[in-house]
Length: 220
Image (cartoon, one colour):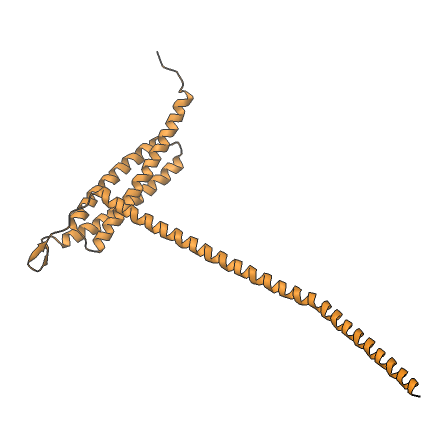
């Protein structure tokens, strides 16, 4: 007897949640692929430890394999064909970039085949011990976090400087406006003071003239 039961709503939610979790894992794998490739490039350019490069290449290949399998599973479950095609193309760019990184690193390793360990005085200095891939990624992530934090601090400092300049300009503008108002307010007072002085002087002059006239009549 055929089973015609329909999936329950909670089962549909679980399906969607599973797809979201898979996409989140894909994002994490891609970030690890980028960090590992960058570390290999850095060691290759700086002619770094051969052992570290070899270990990272192995780890990078494992990341690519896991990412490829996951991308195939997501494409089979995702109903959005256009998005699936876009993600397939994006995944191929990761594979291509990782392939170029690996090829350059292998060329560097071949160039040092048969090369003796570095000599300092009479002692031999072997290659430093290889850090684990997870430790290398942790260091790289810490470095990226420091760069991000430094950028944030610089942006905050710039905002504070801009705000200080704006406040200074506003203060200067306010002072200029106050200066203009003070001059305009002082003019009537000055005029009133001048006018009062003129009136007082006129009164005093008239009084003196009257006194002189009185003296003249009395003398006559």
